[in-house]
Length: 313
Image (tube, rainbow, N blue to C red; front, side, top):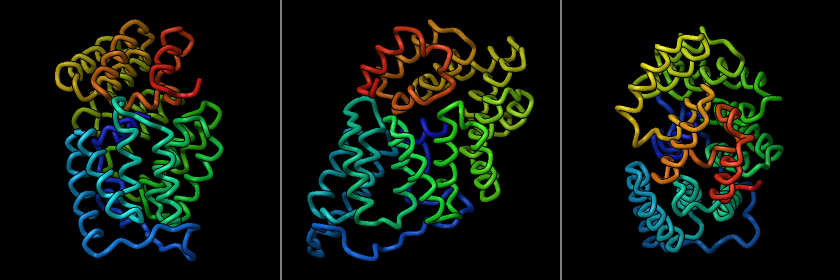
């Protein structure tokens, strides 16, 4: 789930762009116009909307989520029929615990899909949102639809994998989608993160460590800290965690909380969850579905944080 948490915070490639080496997601126009479709924008308004989306995406990537929301709101006002504006507005609404609105994000994604029902990228991201709010059956169906729309999209396969990885009963089923994503882009950091997540949840510390070491800056240390713990290597785990804290405390507070929870250090896990919330870390949206946090779910502080995040109990 760490890859998804990172994506929520704007540290991944834009959803409408393919990961390196993968073909662009399919964007098929709807066969028929959706009911009560918005009137087409004038050429000037359509151009202004595209410019606002482009500006919002830059702000999103820079983690200025308030600025990004304002830019996407401007784009939607200029062109209510812009699926891109709705898509990015939905992403921005769950990218930061500050100003987060799940219901509004759902509305934006549903409107975007009504305009572009063949857009695999929108389907994939929407499936993750449905997972976050506890609508797991719909999340699985939507994620599967995304892989059908674009079977060459790494993002679509990882969205499906991560819905499987959100529940112990379906962890093993994530293997197929992850393997498909790996075949498309074996060097993707997020593919490697999903591979490590699967290995850890299945108790295979050796496999997790082997992949973690190749995951790239930040992710290598984060995942290594967890894999070394699984292998019973306390010193090595702590050394990796110390490096994460020293280098990435501001942008990886949620992941640091996950490491502590994985190691069973509940007080430290909650300390870093509080810090992640204070930093408006978008990873916080995943606390109910992140299996790395299993060890702290029975703690009353966890229920309080879920309520604070506005997630369903």
